[in-house]
Amino acid sequence: MSIALLTEDEFLYQNRISQQQWQASQITWATLKAIGLCHEKRTEALNVTAESYARIIQQCSHVHSVRWRVKKPQHLMEKIVRKTQPHSATFKAKYLGINQYNYDAIVTDLIGVRALHLFKDDGLAIHDYLMSKWQYEEPPVYYVRNGDDDVSAELPADIQVKIHPAGYRSLHYVFGSELQQRPIFTEVQVRTIFEEAWTEIDHKIRYPNFSTDAEICSFLLIFNRLVGSADEMGSFVRQLAVEATQRQQTLMALSNGTETNASDVETLFQRLEEQSEKQHNSQLVIDQLRLQVMQLQTDKKALQQSINANILTSVATVSQRYCKASELLDK
Image (cartoon, rainbow, N blue to C red):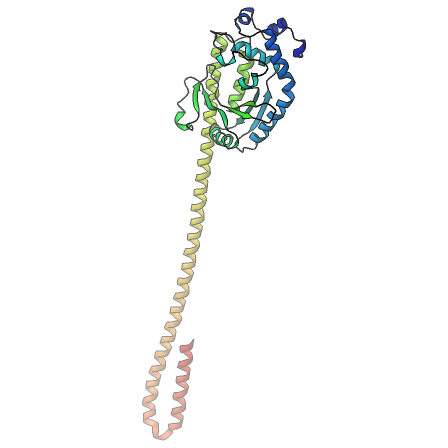
């Protein structure tokens, strides 16, 4: 239904606002409707800004998927009623005096973007990516469930840790944008896929009918703890995979090293065999030379005995023996 056609009674009924809550709120119907009308007219332009944020965030390699929405006019109006009730748990003083001219400077989640990731540890990498793209308007907040392990030591100093009363776990950012004629805030939430699933279930079951049902709230908190355990298991199994890969790489390196060493040993054996063969051949040459020397000595004696009778023949024989010895040495 268009806000222009919406009546006060219809608004209260459709958004389950009691007369007591309405009377406690510090805002008039005229002002509230004017805000709704203004926001309704700006919705299409805000969608463009939301899509721009979503496209940029999706480029982060650690982001699995991105969801976004522009707050619906009646949801905005209902939120303002809750925030303008003094003495209530939802009251915020900054909403006092809100109107159609300043509401977008007060409400920081007119545009909401959710960056979902698979592993819990990826949240910090996404944080670094977001910080490289935009300057936050408010310090980031990491909401945790009461009873979660202390995570402060793992976070950058500019992230505040707060306990969420409903047990939500996620990183919240508020970024400013001037893509439109008026500055606009965008709220970015970073959480795991498990947390997103629980949040959606919790929101649909708990609100608006069972927010005070003790049994349902207790079961949802148990469900919340299981989701936290699932995230821890996801991080653990990824670490196991990393260690398994490292072990496999180490085994492959050892296997390759063993093969290399085996090849080197085989080469050494071949060289030893070659050296042994060379040594054997050298010994043969030496033995042959030794025989030649002995023969030369014998020939020398024979030569001395027959030098006068056959000197030319003896000289030729000696020369031939020397040539043969030289050939053996050259081998």
